[in-house]
Image 1 (cartoon, rainbow, N blue to C red):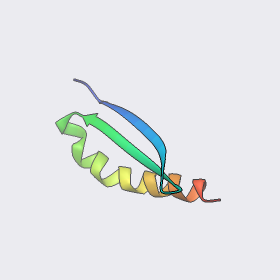
Image 2: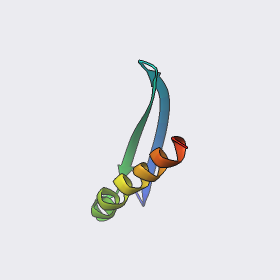
Image 3: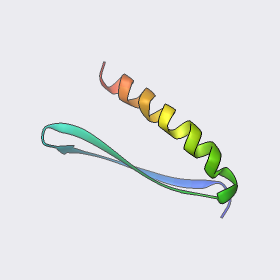
Length: 50
């Protein structure tokens, strides 16, 4: 496998929107994803709450 593959799922849970992310990532990119992805999800959260 080269790079990564991901899927995003959005749904409602108890009146709130829930975003689920499933990612398959090559071992060589794992550290980068673990550092960058939480920041990216916070950005998405901020944009969605405007």
